[in-house]
Length: 59
Image 1 (cartoon, helix red, strand yellow):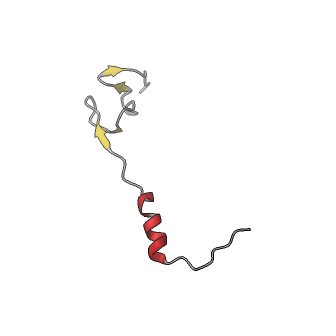
Image 2 (tube, rainbow, N blue to C red):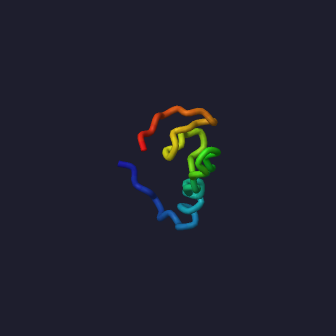
Image 3 (cartoon, rainbow, N blue to C red):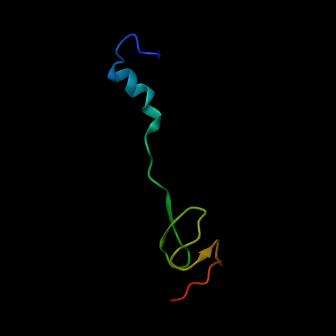
């Protein structure tokens, strides 16, 4: 079993983990119903994608 020879400092651990931060998702708005939509995804509200009706939603 490999064990560490010396204690790793919090600075060294933090520097290693510096790229692991999560970023907020980029939300756009649907051109038809103005709802918040993830980029490159079908609008859940009205079922359109790139201005075309993709999913028929029963309301």
